[in-house]
Length: 458
Image 1 (tube, one colour):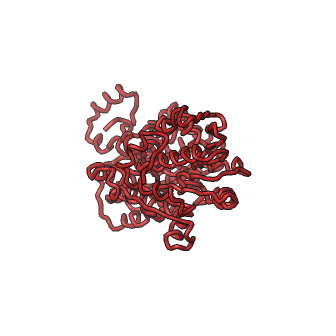
Image 2 (spheres, rainbow, N blue to C red; image 1 turned 30 degrees about the vertical axis):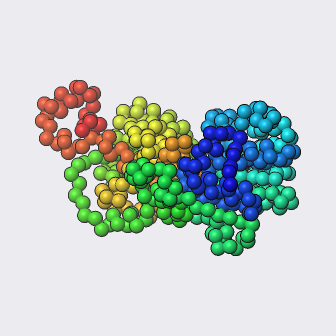
Image 3 (tube, rainbow, N blue to C red; image 1 turned 90 degrees about the vertical axis):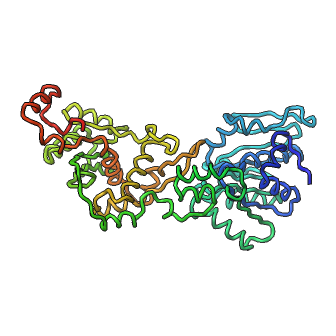
């Protein structure tokens, strides 16, 4: 069967993308009405779906079709900023057809009366009452729930005898994986079809590139993104409980003497936790619950005097900025941690937060962290998951709100601990200054204006 599409450049690439060609031939036959495509990342899912929708709009007059993304923002970005996708629209004299793009209401209207409209699954109310003869649901596994399908799309397509294509790369075990399994074992009937395409099977990505991706993202994400495995939630946790428990079996001796107070600030009812850490081991803690930053600053200063440590690492975004400025003005050595800041390895990580979490993960797995005794800290550390995000598919941590919803409280202890370990390489080794003569101490005192040698660089 010869397949042609409004944009010749898409048609010409079908021979390279055999999995697309096979599916398009199947779709043309209209044997099924519902299709679940669980395909690996970078395998042309959205591009193919868009071409199908445009072709259907040109083929049938006075019909409405829908392209539903996981969020409204994603839908808007596609229609306003993605030249690769919008470049798939045919020239405006194709078969005498003229189309008009409306970026404000995210629609493409064709001269035969058909309309292609873009939606976001996070705005369910905007879809109420909509009518469509065909629909593509993009990144189905990333939707918050299956409400778009069960409550909105399915009833409309049942009435119109329409079709729907679900396209996604796995994201844990959820409603998408459950639906796929039911279709696979024929529980959903002959109207349903499912397909899995992995990066290894397709051959689109070279073996060298796949090996490189495996090293960059780790085996767990590689299995999900390129091998299309439906991983359980535990597989996507950054720091696993078993790794934390294994710390009790490791014998270690500490060569250095590095001290820091790690502060995760809060003034909105969450716990403001302060950990006094020596060589990544929590030795003492302070919990503050107050809305006044000056009061919080005062308590941290008292805690600093109590433990005899003037090195402070603090999350200095938002309310933390005021506290860190106050602490610095009080003469403390403040190391700012900005979670959203660009990661050092920005090809792998979305931001500094993700990079810091993975640094601690590696330290724990290598047994370089002393055993943890705080049960709440252990629980919080083993609760945070990670995912792929952005155009370049970099690693990021799940949002703090998501973790808070799971735990029933904010993971403040975990955040403070992560910062404390992250700051380790930036701290001075105080053992280095034990041999300094009194004359040298006086010289250092004059140069640095301080008698606290712990603030001097190692």
